[in-house]
Length: 287
Image 1 (spheres, rainbow, N blue to C red):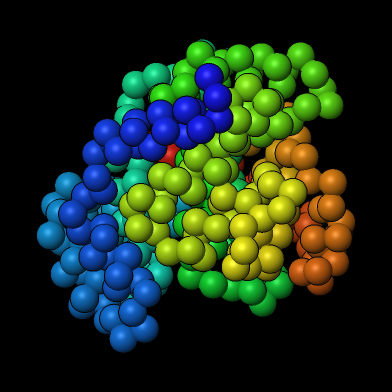
Image 2: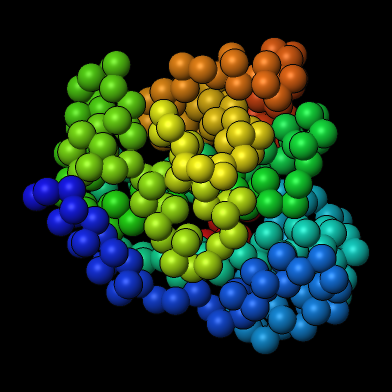
């Protein structure tokens, strides 16, 4: 099948996916509105009782470690912060919208989400360490491998073939195998999906380009390099890895660009490693 035919198939299949819960496009607009208030966010999320309940379940997980139960969004916002509550709602809403079927035996979905949460945690930590702290870094890390689920769902046989190819050749990364077998990698597929769901470019573009030699125009190199460093850190932690090491030959240059020291890299790796139980708890609450 030619690449253009694969792209047409991908677009047609993505169009068959359910839309996001109705409150999430409204929440995305509020996220981009600097004048939005805590009341606006609370009222919007509250329109979806199931989403509200799941957000509170995650907020009460061991990941955040509160001793008392958070019983309402009004209570969650002052404890977690407005940006964290928005992030949780977006993340939970995306996960709820993804198909539950179609899982490669050699690629269990739980391992993907544990890795994604590890990258998100590393992104958050790196943001604090490097003064590039922005409210979408956790979301960017959490959703960076979303395209793998779409590949597994819509190109299952091709994806299994790519997994086998990457496993056979230690010099070949999974994204390289995906590109060889399918014609595009999971970062590109994830960006198609998030773009359809009207996510902002600050999230879509780094995800699209995180395995590309030439990232898309207008990509923030700070966000892209933070994502690549966080991805490498998560793969350094054996329990969080689900594939071979990512192919980032310019990682040292990325760290210099971010003014990130090796000690800070190790500090982040140690921090994420110490959060193993909490990350597992987050995944279980999110599922």
